[in-house]
Length: 370
Image 1: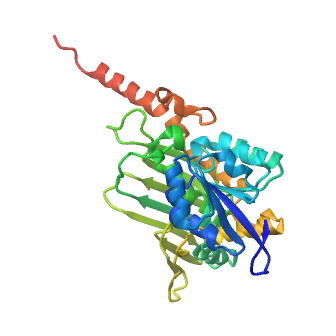
Image 2: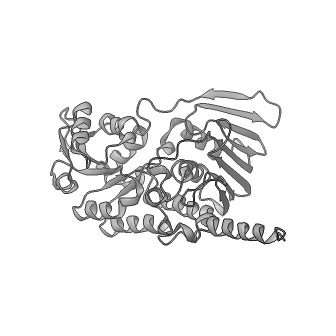
Image 3: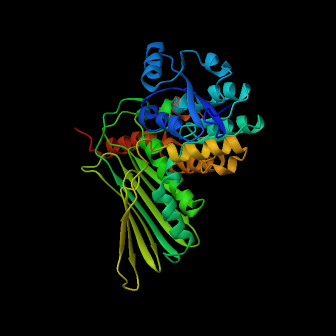
């Protein structure tokens, strides 16, 4: 780290590995704008795109070679923003040069890979932070305070519903070998982590997943239902439907004193409380951070690094591992055991074997033609 030119303290100089879409708006500007933080270098395999990114964002150094970025003495910490499928090798190389890491979510394709990454940094005695950035949203800081102050009373139920119109099935988020699943793994992981933050570790997690009957054998899940318990005695249900006819999203927490409704919990701003005793309801809005939604969490990462106290960051490897475990449990009936390289053999996925068995039963039930 280097002294701040203003004389107010130190600056953490970041190297970004993988400067794709997420770094354009959500994270890259946040790394530049956070107090005591700057981006010194970017790396992308496409040299022309790396140079273009550096030019547009005012970054001093660009490269197409990972080792060149990691060897740079002006890079104090690394932000890893590549897709999940290649993270283990990169994590090993980051840890080998003794640099802490802020990593995009989800950590990897399954819990086993996520645990391996966490252990790489733990054994090197280096901090690892994960970009579940909604933990630091002012909206959810307020919701957590409401829950800690017992304003809802004892929770009895938690309900979440997301409906989204189908998207073209292209890009790494739809490639199980790269992402570890479908949009549930990429998008749904945010809600799982948010529930963990607000309510504590989820318990008794169960799930089921399906996909369109016409989908190819390599296609990931596109509808997921999860049941769980949370807090002292709250029953929970969450549904993600990525082949719906409309777009809708809501999170509802019901207690014996009040009900909290959060429309569009991922990207909205509204909060509504309705009280059991008939008191006037409360309605207010807390917009997402703007323009870089990750900046509040990034600030906690920078503070944690500069003060040598990883607990100052709201999203750690430990909390991210809990989310990775939930994902594996919920998707097991679709992919089978997820601790192995399940993406290499789609023919072994229960969703494919059950479809094959169903076709066999259908064929056997048809009357023979004379």
